[in-house]
Amino acid sequence: MSWWSETGVDDDDEPYGDYDESSIRVRPNPKGNRPRTKIRPEHNDAVSGVVLGVDRGRFTVLVDAGGEQERIITSTRARELGKKALVTGDRVRLVGDTSGDQGTLARIVSIDERTSLLRRSADDTDAIERVLVANADQMLIVVAAANPEPRTRLVDRYLVAAFDAGIRPLLCVTKTDLADPSEFLRNFEGLGITIFTGSKEAFPLDEIAEQLISHETVFVGHSGVGKSTLINALVPTADRATGRVNDVTGRGRHTSSSTVSLQYSSPAGTGWVIDTPGVRSFGLGHVNPDNIVRSFTDLAELALECPRGCTHRADAPDCAITEAVREGRLGEVGTVRLDSLHRLLDTFAG
Image (cartoon, rainbow, N blue to C red; front, side, top):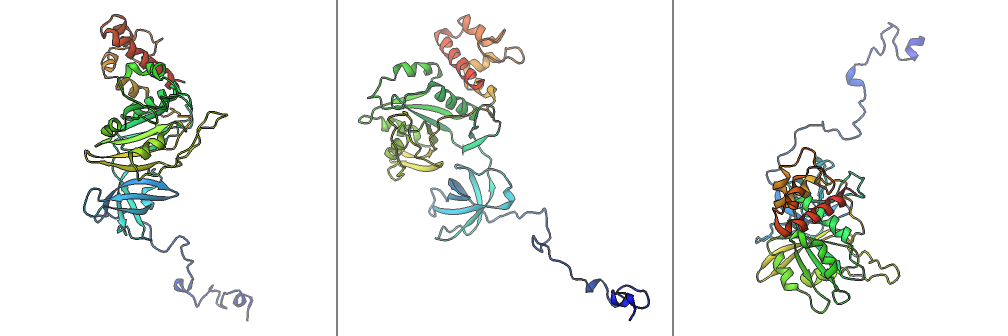
């Protein structure tokens, strides 16, 4: 036997003379043997649902809301969604086992267009947004008159986020038996928002409940202000954990760890209550200041006369809004409204 024979080449100098391509072992694709394709299934059999909560990659979804087959199912996200965020309040389409039976798991394959997005960032310099809830149309800001002390700037930040998202803000002050909130509430007289006040013994639950009907209302507030207590009173089956305020630091303990959507029901109608984790800061790095101005509809019309690039802040030269208010064209309320606008714009600017 020649040297070539020992190395796999025959004596006629033909390498591997007795072999052809079919003799070569092909290593399998480590990611699967199915060829990749950009063609995605249409999912014509998908059912509609609303995301009620998110927990470690699993989504609680209400299917056939209000129908005869209304049910809650557990689902995961399909790979075709990519990195698009899925949040509480999203209206989605699902395939797979959507029966809701124990142990079943459906797949979310698409997200419907959102009507609103409530977002926040880690701080004002962070442009990366963190979506809290989708498709809400109201925000109930819950603050305490004392223990913990109300923070005007935090409420301003909630208002800016609501106006940016196109969500109607409401304000609720709890623990009025501990302190008079009048001085605090003067900061918001120019906004024309609905305000509720009450103590633990006398709280306007009926008035708040009336505002929830036919709306999706996201509840926000500093830890320890009584937000979870209020939600439990409105939705007795919610069973949201409640906490106490630290006597030394004056801070509340976080009790809500995730955003959850709960159905409010009464003889007068139904609505959705969306509970969010208590926060001590609310970054506005994602906000468009033009949306803040647009939320002041009477002032937004005057803003059309402003010079290009006008910031509409108190030090803005030739601002048409400021000039109109100084001339008294909006009456006494104009001054209050302008002060509120300036404060919110200053809050956004840092």
